[in-house]
Amino acid sequence: MARESLAEKKRRVQVIGEYLDREYPDAKCALHYSTPEQLLFATILSAQCTDVRVNLTTPALFAAFPSAKEMARAKPEKVEELIKSINFFRNKTKSLIGAAKMIREKHAGQLPQTIEELVELPGVGRKTANVLLGDAFNNAQGIVVDTHVRRLTNLIGLVQEEDPVKIEQVLLPIVPKEQWTKFSHWLILHGRKICIARRPRCSECVIRPYCDYGRKEVP
Image: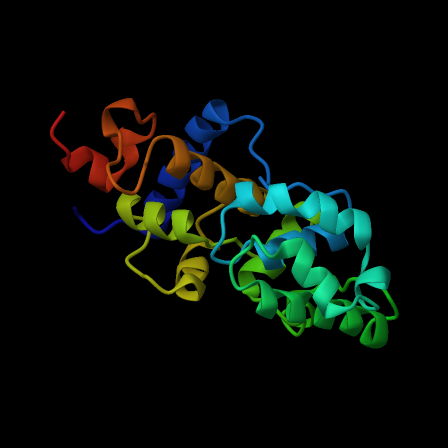
């Protein structure tokens, strides 16, 4: 493939976005939550765990600890009992309670709304911070790069990177800011339904003409 200019790559992303928006018009975060703090808890639990498993676990957790106020006072053994079906549940219990305590003690009980402050919370990295800002506060300050986004952006040919932070820095100038949140959701849904890791279904892909991998695949 000839090297694309920034303008050409932006145009390709625009077209890809148009197709994926039609394909997944209701794309949104797959985690279930009622408040930003509940999305924080769910996202902490989702690390190396499926959204389906998290969504099966959080109703009981949210009933017992609906906000950071209650979670900050939680006994670890009670939280562990409620989330024991989640992998690394002991470490995640520490993160849940630790994040809630920091919200109470450092942020006067209010969940912060900047990446810099969010990543200081236990169990929160840049990906989680971007999820919270984009989905809970409608204030995208970055692009979520999970395993699906990393894989698809490389297959499509938008990036040649494996590090999520570097991938995000490449995507920020080529994805329209108003689509920073949606773009990740589109790719995540597409990765689950069509561009499956073990065998991409290129013949069914609506963005195949704009995908480096898809264009190389034999029909």
